[in-house]
Image (tube, rainbow, N blue to C red; front, top):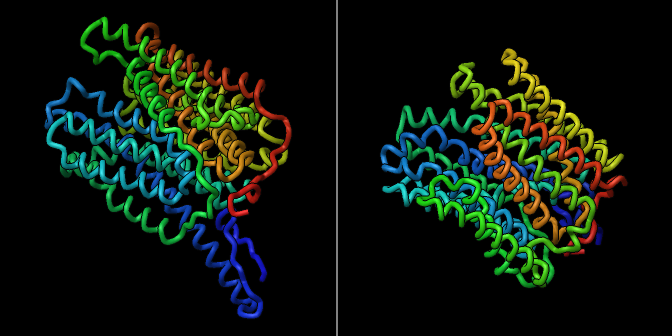
Length: 484
């Protein structure tokens, strides 16, 4: 019996008996495996695109929705519900994917997302819409990190950054064109189609993945740590609410909420230190690449989401363009992100995580300083485009290496939980940075927000220098998988 590794998934093999199959038959089988791999990665990327699209498409439709359903007083809750449940899903879906397989968790997450989309499209009250957006967020938070986890299963380390650049580009395009398409839908059709348009595309992604991807066999499952997941969700919700307490009715409630958030975080930390089934095992956190990836993504999320929130706002506030032009301002950031991610993999494989992280954050710091100068001196818009492009060119390698390196340093059965933890930290970092810099901009000059972005980039540079491992990466793609 001849075992041929098809690289379709870590332990996936074709068992070819030479007495039944000739060389041509085996070549056909291997070509089929390559095709299935591409289809599976495309399906996962489409899932990411749909979930990312829904995160921003609603922004341009919300004024119309609020007028129709009468919910102007709870306007922000539509966004907060999606963000909170997305973060919660990211915290737990990786553990579920490692225990039950990528495919059932991805399909379940997409089913939740599509069910939430249908319910949002049929909502008759604003309170129902907020609830249904929370269901959508649970699905979106499950789908997004699993796409990169599936990519890590399908591709070697030297191929993975190019695939991740493609996935990131799709995610960026969805975020940029979302508000534009949402405005067109509201203008020419009912706002309900903003949600319903996701259903056929998501269903196609699920169908393609079911046809092309297969999970390898898994070892026996241990305890899932449901209590830790519940505490993590509660802490995430309270921290998010504490960062945006303006909707609370009384001053006492606004003061009590931060205290409750701190208490929930402390309780979660104590529970995770004592439990036998933590959300992220301590042995993984002790791995230098994992520790660096988690710390770096807090800064990456802060820089990314703050830039996405305040650069378009500055463009429109200065009268330099309409909402469409403001969205276009982020195109150089995303283009630089994809370009930087593509070339950084060679440095990552040959020289390790440290030079990539430090060089990337140095470029991001230079871009953020240039952006702060553009804002402070009101330089022409093309200079802002150039600064944002340089910022993205630095963020791309930083983000790619902070995902690829942890994935490559852990075994298959931990890859899902590590990827999800990295994404959850990125989203939490973004939430905190957007709230903090928003308050800073209200209390001081507009340029203070962009100085804050530069400070975040400097913090990432210092963190990378202190934590990033110096040794070259060893690809664990075929090592320590359940089937072996």
